Image (cartoon, rainbow, N blue to C red; front, top):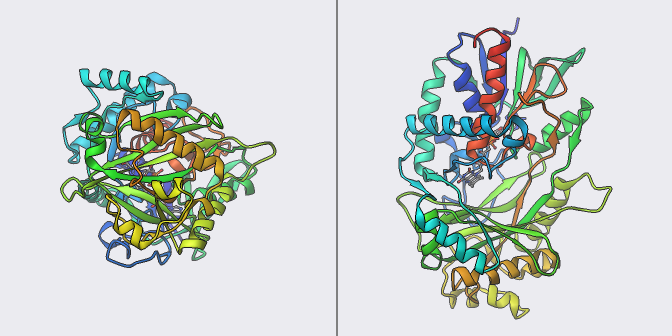
Length: 463
Ligand SMILES: Cc1cc2nc3c(=O)[nH]c(=O)nc-3n(C[C@H](O)[C@H](O)[C@H](O)COP(=O)(O)OP(=O)(O)OC[C@H]3O[C@@H](n4cnc5c(N)ncnc54)[C@H](O)[C@@H]3O)c2cc1C
């Protein structure tokens, strides 16, 4: 007979790992499942020189032990203001305490001690941003870098391996519920594993799957506004004044023409632009950025994302985002790159024009082309207006040589209805991380895993 677990955790990203760490000393049977591979077996063909994304299933970049965190830039944003809605769900004091707790654990597993975004220079930069019509959101931040991120995650896996069961390359297909209480999960190979508690932490990669399971179980879902934009690449020197103090400058702006919220996201000084495939069984290629602590390029990249709300009725933000990304994939074979000067002059970028550019693209596999074929006017207009505002703060950002890669889409998932301990409307079934629309980054994803785990420990009398 199959073993019955006290707790099953779906998803080996930061949310699942931190839930596991919290549960691992309680002397109970815990199983952590992920459909992806071991960290060392995860290697993206593009990063090994392939010139296009071959849609690995599942994508090495976002699936496997460590989740999307394994290849992330490893920026730990030590704030409850950005990176998710934990503050709203569990209260500001609890959220603040948890962020500090998560920071301590990352430090114990090898995170660097240097902290960005503190000190007097930050206030001066905030002032300068205001003069440019931008809001600078100062954030305390620790930077791991992609290589250290992997070391930290591997250290966590070593610690967990002796205390809990970890099954990789194991996809969860469905959730079994009886009389309003979770009972088991079913794997893609048909195997059924019983559990007393379930933590669902499938990340953005698994958000579509989670939404479809939630619909089957008739759970309440809220649609998140969708974030669509481009990855911008400039010479590192252009952003140096900001990145040397803040590492990541989180800037917010309301576009003049559409009054949409536009913001910078995931800044990678000295980093590389990368392709990723997301969307589970029906993947699309999107763009992202990483930054290594040692191996640095001459460029800085960051996303400019536009958040829009739609007219009612609209319940398919993920389908909409995928549709836009697929359009870019259709005309470029993956990711498209264009110089800002070409976009403004209404012409496509070509290999020859890119060669003349002062910014050498770090993503060699991107196809030079015209973003206006792929992105609706509303998004492009807002992105250009944001770059022009940023140019007053960091002169050169709106240079004709600035590169725009499309499309960056953040599938922030539908939000499940949750209690303050992150329990769903199904008894003993919890959700954590990006997949359930709770978090949008490593720290809050990790913290949400801890919240769910602590509640389980309380219920079984171990806390
Ligand atoms: C390139 C890149 C750079 C990033 N940089 C940063 C950064 O610098 N700072 C920051 O804070 N955030 C960053 N992020 C975001 C960060 O990685 C995520 O917010 C975080 O990893 C979310 O954690 P999670 O545990 O919720 O989900 P994930 O890390 O996405 O993990 C979910 C896991 O669940 C698994 N899964 C999904 N469905 C199933 C299923 N049905 N069965 C079994 N397994 C399943 C997936 O394979 C995946 O491994 C970056 C992301 C990317 C992709």
